[in-house]
Length: 168
Image (cartoon, rainbow, N blue to C red; front, side, top):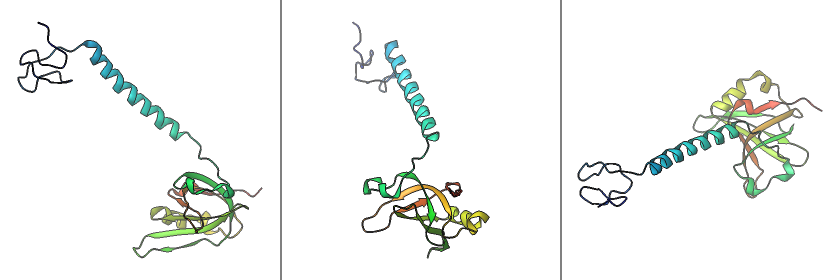
């Protein structure tokens, strides 16, 4: 009598997709097609993840105009270009973490740019950012934060995401 799929051929207990019975350690015969299907599914999923990671790495961050900012864009990674509207300031939080920030304006809206921790320390130590003043054109990439009743802000998490642009 042939054994039923998913049952041990020796003790006839249900073992599901296992190849060896956990009750009597008897090897169960599996259809080769199912084993191949399982291996193929794992290989395709790993390949898909690799392609997804590669596409995300080479994707350009979308440029956002100040007037286009909406609450639904909260936590989006965007690029914002504009002129510095307030003198850059830096300091330390109550916990001793460094911070760096200023206001950026693109002609349609104002956006608060901020960096914390190691990123802020690197920006403060960078000679290029030490000379920044009101009116300098800057490109900033980071994570957008939109709160009701407050000015939108952009948090920089990498010092390379804040660069000076040449004036048009």
